[in-house]
Image (cartoon, rainbow, N blue to C red; front, side, top):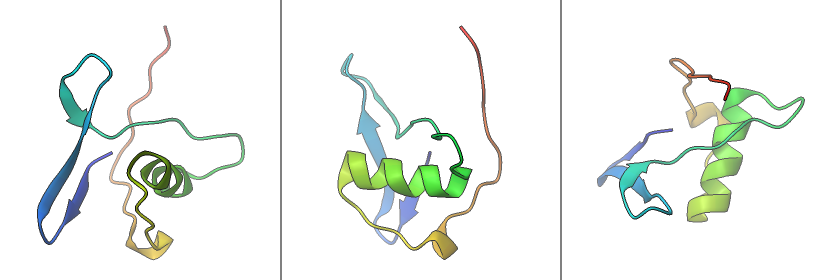
Length: 63
């Protein structure tokens, strides 16, 4: 997830110490927009309005 605001981008710090976009997974029954808002609240304690969330694409993998 990429968070862009008036002050620029909000990166996250991975447990390995590298900078990366915030990320997470959708829970059963949750839309991608809802998952993004929830993950942002959990990781950065930022609350967003779902109408401000845009989902231009997704990336999925198994492994």
